[in-house]
Image (cartoon, rainbow, N blue to C red; front, side, top):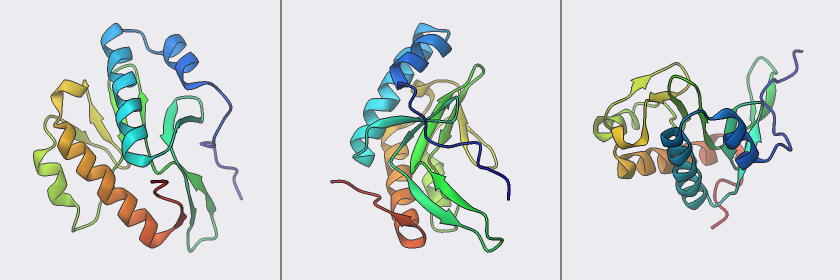
Amino acid sequence: MAKNKTTATEVHVIDFINSYVDTEQKKADSLQLIALMSEWSGFEPKMWGPTIIGFGSYHYKYASGHEGDAPLIGFSPRKAEFSLYVFSATEENKHLLDNLGKFKMGKACIYIKKLSDINIDALKKICEATFDYLEKLHECACRQK
């Protein structure tokens, strides 16, 4: 079985931001996302793989036998745009995207150019719905609070 590429690392999150993020706006947005996601999840940020900042973790196991750990929520300040790993695409959660603002949907993430393009309250609701979803379906301590 293939080894998971995205695992928790010991790289310091602020060191990553200072060395990887190339604009002051993206640095400021990254620091704001860290503060928000820490508050909402109850977990401190941790690097997952080389470029994902994650909060908390859960264990998944697929019918195929593939299993591993992943962050509850997270983001990556990629060069072109932010990748937000915050959404569990279920029928009951799709309406939460209606008020999010300017974004593109990927297979496993939401893409935004900058934080001011989205509604922070809507993002919080999306994250909370994701915690609930993960807590029901996976082994996780989804809330420390």
